[in-house]
Image (cartoon, rainbow, N blue to C red; front, side, top):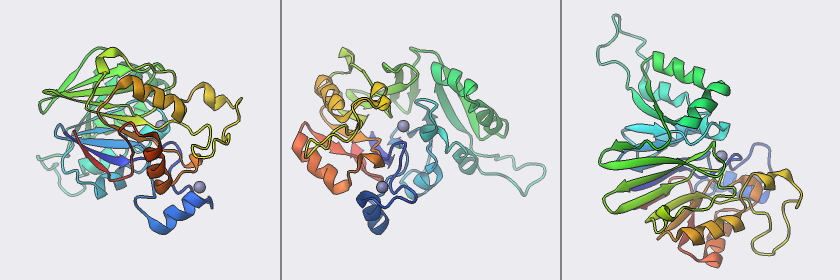
Length: 284
Ligand SMILES: [Zn+2]
Ligand SMILES: [Zn+2]
């Protein structure tokens, strides 16, 4: 398996419109790897996509992806789903032939874990997917908790995190194991069966304090700390996980750390950690 990070940003991508902070100015001037689009990644081999942020069309177009066997959605949040019209582009619209070209549009298999099905319905995301399915661009598969999917010799196992409307995924191919968690590690305790995975892709967590000076960056009573994991909490999960390699993604612009700062931070914390950037490729 080979993981391609399509988007390494979080709910706030970099640069952020109208922002003149150092990190956004640097990103505008220098482009990749300083710019970050929304959270998405592709696993070559089984050819599986995870989540479609707003920039999904742009991300896939600039990527090395030539065929998408399936897409899994981790949760309903807009930063992970708002690019869902990408399936219309991937599928192709036959404006020209009548009767329709028998080759038809390209149809992508979409897998929705149980709670994602419920949340898509409640949050009015589902109606868009029903439209895409009616047009033949996607085929929806609803997964009960505990169900796995086999794709190209790889087993994909969705499971709930502590924030239990969100799923992470374990991908197994022979003896190789890949953990993909797109977001929301708040209060997660890595279960024993995941210990020692070959590669873990995890959200980086919020920088409650400046990691170099220790200065507080988020007010201690800010409600965001009640539902988002911090970077320091994430490091504790990394230690418990004992993964052979860790890539931290879902990096928020508001954390104020640029690509070079994060490389420095990776050196500082050790632990086989690398911070993701858009277009990064990692072999498992
Ligand atoms: Zn997110
Ligand atoms: Zn900024």
